[in-house]
Image (cartoon, rainbow, N blue to C red; front, side):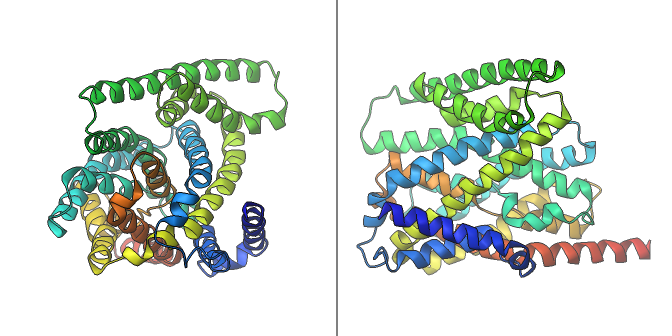
Length: 408
């Protein structure tokens, strides 16, 4: 069956790619297409008719292998290709979102979950809040591609999306390890082990990224590297740092993110080359992850969906994130329309999917079905809602700003 799954995935991806321009004009994104394709393909494979979680447990290793590789590459590339010399206004928005908006969103979501269902314990509620808080700007690609949207707004959203999953990751890892330790009545040294794993990963990543950056800058300056290998640098470096950290007892994801931050490539041309190839590579892995998500995860948990989960999903997307963004933007020079726009475009995407798959490898999914079900629901709703609304909302913001400018 594995071969047929790969064939069907490649066929779905090829169909979307061939008609991508026309589909995107109709606000159909690649994540929407791949989740739907995976869910439809699961029907003839009999996955929808299996007992809940049987598909998830049976396909878990297959799903997490690709997901982990995808996350490592995305974490590294997002951190490596960000140009921190961008205009100050974009950096100011990103800093507000990351340092104030993100913690507020996590805390507000955590409190909302506990208040909505007092049977949910604090740590699982925190884990769910951490899963659904990182954003994925790629789900709203028209936001980044519409040049009429003010550049600070577009770039601020992009920087936030590139860094927030890496910032959330150490906290998420610690919370999952804590819950796993509590379930197994483990020893009290778990905190030390978690800190060592995270700090070792960060140290390995920073060291490798710094050294690789120096080497890359050296060979580029002396024109020692062939163009096609410039395109491979990002992916090779990401996988190298991730695997090396895992072998040395560190957290590979933390290492990949830290390595990207410390790479510091001085050549804009090389950075752009790495970004362009990395985007294509990451897009392929992202499509595969969403395909597996639709084929394995959605059929495994859909029977556990409840009205309370729908209320949580709606509140998280429409109220909690926008409200926290509005608070963090107080005192900024941006209009109410721009604040609402930034608040709305916090799609839950690839990081949330991968966090759930990683969690499933550490904690028995059967014991946390509501958590997986709620996370899956909000991702599904976000993929559709943000994918459909990205282009129309961007055009609406441009018209709104034009009217404000005309009045002034």
